Length: 337
Ligand SMILES: C[S@@+](CC[C@H](N)C(=O)[O-])C[C@H]1O[C@@H](n2cnc3c(N)ncnc32)[C@H](O)[C@@H]1O
View 1 (cartoon, rainbow, N blue to C red):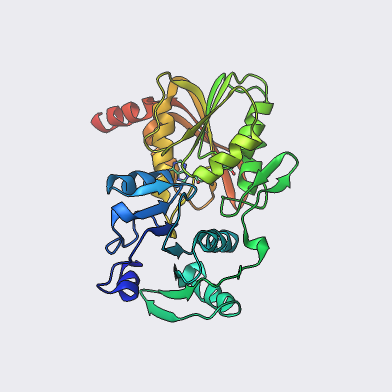
View 2 (tube, helix red, strand yellow):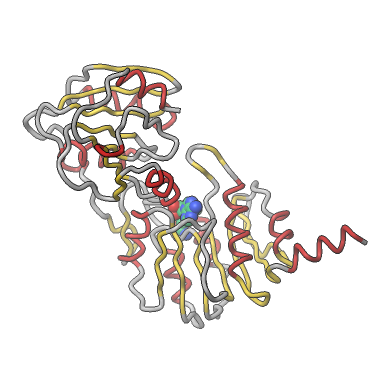
């Protein structure tokens, strides 16, 4: 928890002037930051909802001028550098830039790298992380390559720093595609669509009339919009756990996330399975890929009548399920008899 580090940085002296917080999520200690004076750059939908509920101005791209900034270091080094460059470009000379992060997200190596470029004025360590301050100099201090740009990672597909599997198609999704039927159902949902590679493979198969790409991360969905240029695609920036459609679909395909922040959390994948069951007609079908060690079969059987493994290797398993809604009923009946 970075809250205690924020306390060390600001004490009982809240920041003066308009504040930019890059990457702060709903778990961040916001105590010193006045909602009326603080803009938060955050693109993860569940965080955005929580932060907006507390009255903060949440954006995916910062707007306006700022007196100081704080960057939360993410695990992706490319995204960390991009955030530092972005914050620095928006601050006037002499402004304070605080940099906060966990050891497990690489704050020590970020601190080493910045020490090679700028004087670091204050460093505090607490709660498995560090927070430190630099002052913005007159001239650009960071290498120009730190500025985020889209990179082509496969023909016709580009990504930006920090998105899932930013270097190219995820091997688990490649394995899943190899097990999709030659002809797909007409109305399909890709839950957790990322930058769109899996969605594009779904659309390349015959049968699909409409494909809903559901993704919580705004940067990923923006990539998907560039990568999947197809009139059958519908893009939804939202939380898959609460996603609903007015009409049921007859196919769901997904490579669900299994991490919430740093913690492996199979409950997130279980929530995706429940959403899939809610979205599908009784005759519809789910195809999903999961890491071999993740125990999704029980939740699949709770939500679907028929569940089977149709492929995989020592790393992944490809699962399919049909009979949405009927699994739970069948189980209840089984328990009674
Ligand atoms: C394992 S990745 C798969 C991405 C993409 N389908 C692919 O095959 O490369 C899971 C995706 O789910 C997204 N995600 C995580 N939590 C989410 C949520 N609550 N709602 C919607 N998407 C979420 C992540 O941002 C990530 O893009």
